Length: 228
Length: 228
DNA sequence: CGGCATCCATTTTGATACTG
DNA sequence: CAGTATCAAAATGGATGCCG
Image 1 (tube, rainbow over the protein chains, first blue to last red):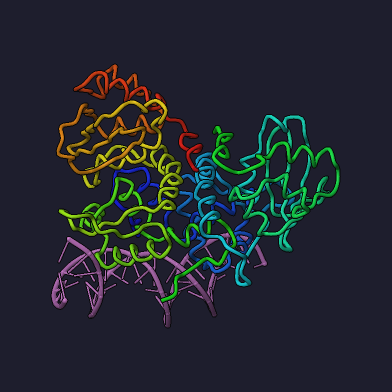
Image 2 (image 1 turned 135 degrees about the vertical axis):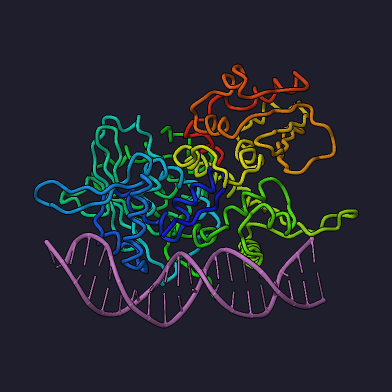
């Protein structure tokens, strides 16, 4: 079946031809937390039909946004991973995510799904790479009963949903509403830590590094560190 | 009928609940060139059914992205216009549009629609407001047989599709492929003018101001600092 | 099992006709 | 001009089947 297209010579229209269909950008968001298997994608995206997920992944592969890779030796499972173009797309999605959180995220409803990796993948690009050049640390974020991990290693930042089998150096615990306040620029990170809305336990040195490397307030300057 | 939602507590998912359906972001793009009437939206978006346009506009109004306004006295027509939230959304769309132009816009095909206002609305936010504080000028852009206008006035930048009834101070003429090269950072503005891919006619002072106020090269991080 | 493909009921979309 | 009404075509959600 031929792909539906807007037939407009316009960057936005072309983007939407590629990633404008239902679920597509959420699949990309899932892959922002590193490579994932088909089932893990399926689990993370409640409500997507298994056949639709397969179709979307095939399209994203054709369009050079993701690629399929066989994990080495022991795992031997097939994972989907973002290409370079997919990583760029992921960065381009940040402003849209911030718009959504500012204007259309209220209190969390009982019917809402939530995974700690969702805010993390959007926060990770905001980490100042210069400031973590010499920091190797694993952070666990516990939010609303879910857990996700962010690692600083050799000046790189990676996010993962699954437990990396090591103990984290620092455990950061907070509530979804606090994440909304921070992401919307309505609160500063230091204030939130100071008044206990964010609790930080573990290695104090690594903990301090985390808060140094993150923007204290997410606002206009938030995107500036995204250099590509 | 109840809106379909992803039911995820995530800024991106919420954005997509609001503007993720077919045509919605293109309607917003159309309104980035100022208020428009229903018919003008319908004309600019070839292929959208009139009933779907009406539905989308109603939803966007409910969600505070656009509002309806009666034009004063002589015109007396009803126009749709972006709200403050809609303007923020428009800025958030720029990185997505740049991603599309970089990765998925090739040569213009005969079946492609094109309007000069499409690139203009994404270029306008990149104008350095400081540098045009004292410049009042009207620029006409002629691209692929279509024409659109950009005005600098009191440090503000506005884009319009329709002829403002005055003669432009400067007429800039070029081809769609040149716009793609510039938007993708594959060419600099000054080079394109120097080798004649962009022709500039009219008031030399105003013309110089335009090129001073635009970034010479558009890189992938362009626009990220504008996301509010 | 993981990784899909197929089938079918429900929604969404596109195209056209029609109304104040 | 600014939409609504209607109906066919396409996309989606959910269940199930298949195959290594």
